Length: 299
Image (cartoon, rainbow, N blue to C red; front, side, top):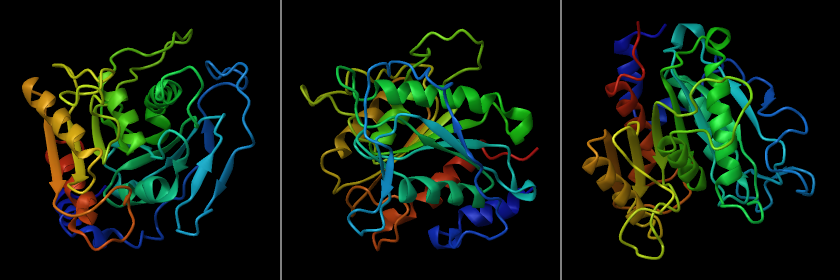
């Protein structure tokens, strides 16, 4: 298991200390369906083209579309490096597609370098007709968190240090998982809690009430039980920056742990891409926050 001193050295070494990912890291496991075949909730009558993953714009961004079978994929941390923490990663894509590499698998591999197990969530997209944009994805996210907690012994993880990290629409999804106390659908089997223990939100979308512009979007309800949250966004992300500030204010008013970074330069959608702006160092800041909050503790 990695020592506290070495862990802090990794966290403070900057983003470039995380790349390239060590070849000694264990590879990701097979995709695990979140629901039994034919029992994905609310999908009766939903017809989609076949699922597809492509770099259609030749920009290095892998886009997954038409997800009707939501899954999770485990990226285990090597035994000598494993802190026992685990983070579910939710890519963005406007609830229309999933940016599965620079907001997905690349993030899971980075988490492994700081002693964190990772789970890549492939939630349902695009938005389902006559349902809230986040309704089906939230069912998938909650189910994934529950199933992760059933893997405690098999995956060598701590069920009380299960976080969620989301980008853009995935950041909104992570926010919904963090602020929703109960599971959104009834389940016959007894499963652990669906609420994460902490969250990392990277340029989260749809946080601001678009009608009033004076508070959070109505579906987001921060209260005295909301888990600790780390938020990062750039000032130039004009559509979503104010919503992040509003979320921080609500966390502060409810006396909840929250850290907000608004960088002076940068736009939207940078994820783990190599960019020149300082905001590219967000993984260093997020890792330091997780360590400081005790989520990467070694025992």
